[in-house]
Image: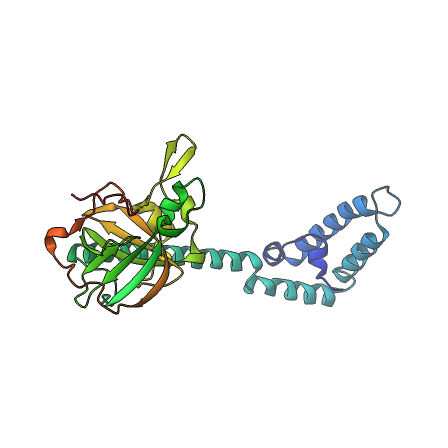
Length: 294
């Protein structure tokens, strides 16, 4: 038989182990008779194949007529208790998964606390960018446009880091870059890992929900922190803190290009009096509009 006869009769290894031979055989007979009343071929619900299997199982466990067979199958069936059953494997996997989740939560908390400490120190990216130019597609502006925008009014902007790691912003048009403060780059999340529209905060508008340019810290921790890279990476979403508020993270946009800063783009633009301080209001990036300053 492919299956142990005790299993065919519906007995568990635990019961087979705990009962003495006489009591066990009486239980075997009772199970056999009950199952035969269900599967007997003369019944409408019966099955000749199942009835035959039950007969063979009972013959193998007929203690008075075949004690050696009874004891052989009993011993083999009891050995199953020492094996890792499917249930015990599932329980073990559940325990391991629980430990993994707790460890992940611990690491996430430690990573987030480290991020906040580094934000207070003034820099987050590692290594600190120097003489780098990145072009960014501003998704939050793109979401607000009811139609595609091209040319000088397209929602692109550039962040430039000088040789000292100071940050500058250049918007479309002929206006030179402006030194900015109150903005701290957190890092990038690969494009395939998240869907920004689902994460950004929304406000009601005339045409439905309008996406803001930020998401809440708890949303960022849940969806973005596990994938965060503290570097400037093309084809990734760039996030930042603004001012001292760590309850929000701002989506600066999708990094299109990251390249070395060359030429004289930053000559004559290092005047602190022209420094741009980020406010809660979203900066406008069009050539014919002024950037708000605090």
